[in-house]
Image (cartoon, rainbow over all chains, first blue to last red):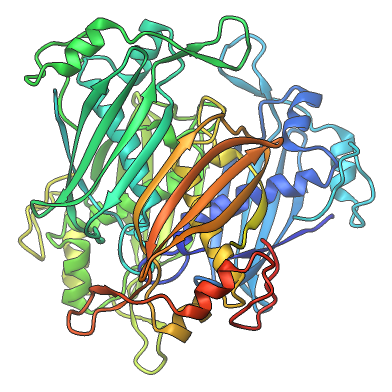
Length: 153
Length: 153
Length: 153
Length: 153
């Protein structure tokens, strides 16, 4: 699978009075990291929504295990990859490392979701396009769907 | 003017490593407090959007002055009122008190905004309905537009 | 077990462009709901830290399953209870309901953590005091450790 | 003055149901942008705290004027610079641009704050070190206090 790596700094406002990251902040990092992983297809999040007529890729199941705290000013590496493809759902695995050690790992199970054809405001799971699967399954990151500069972020 | 008062507790996740509220959190409190002030009209935020065809009341100008920090577990009182009515804009003044002392005060200048009739995605300022002005100008809170139980929150 | 119930309104700033709650926001709700559950012991979060010399109850494992979205202006009920007691860790189960239906459920596994006696900045798990377990295991909520008015929130 | 420029993408979780950035999120961007501006001195936030014995640079006054909305997936440029130096306080001016147009501008007035020598938990304003002023006043960014790679972020 294609692994997307981001280098981030832990910011003051992400930390709590114990001086460590307030844990819901990690899910914000997961969410944006999934966005950047999917950008490796060569499509921005908005372009992907337009091209395939989806409203998004909402989360249905999520979890994380915390091994060591991250602190203000720490530089962390976030590694994200799809760990499992279903027909209309998939699981993204995230690992966050500080100083080469695993601080936490987690997952997001998400659904490829289009507007429901009959029920306004509701969504309906759709089969994930084969080219998206192919692109994010290619460990070299060469296989892209769009032509956006697919730089790591 | 009608003053809406809310009693809140400062939560762990709102505070930073210095043990005090991370200042952008106060603007989240301002935003929700404006919501609860407008609920004193007897209309929920969603009902108000439906009744008047507005997309919301976006902020155009905002500011705050911080006098004393609020800390984890502090009980604070938030007092909110419209301090000025324009034709299609208005200013809400917020004061946050701890132990009877003013911790901070600020304001949000907002616009009564409907979808632009010609430009998709854009908005257009609209005159504020007279009954909304009347309701939020009545210090007793008796003058309501809708019939929702207008309890303080 | 004692179940703590909170009634909350979903606020504008908790929702995303799809009009539903941005999922990391639910973990902020979980975190504050655990705080209010423990307040049913009669001790505020700060008082509990002082009385037992703990730095907090950090999360080591967390998860959630989303069944139906919550939207702006929805009134939700959050039900929180300890579902399992270990020696120095425990699991809090949270359920969020809208209109009587389960929107999501999740858990937080947390540790009763004191400062490490030898390693500055580090923490050490401690046995959970029996009276805390007794108080939060009493479904009537009558068994309190402190004398703070233990109202639901 | 030295201007620090950051290029950011507006993320899904920063936007509200109107599809535009929820305004308190801009203050989180201001806060981190001030952090990166001060990193141009060659000192990380943590190194600066250690070197000068300060607890931080808390905000005392803040404001923003919103001219055009930023939307999900927009690329924005944040320009930050000190606009005024006082003895122990200073003002940082932030401008956020999309597609070359000014979306919003704002300021943060902050204090150079050390722990109060007599009152535990309180802070005391201190004179800003001359070398910090010199470093952030040098438009070329060559004048650094520490030797950290002072790259733009």
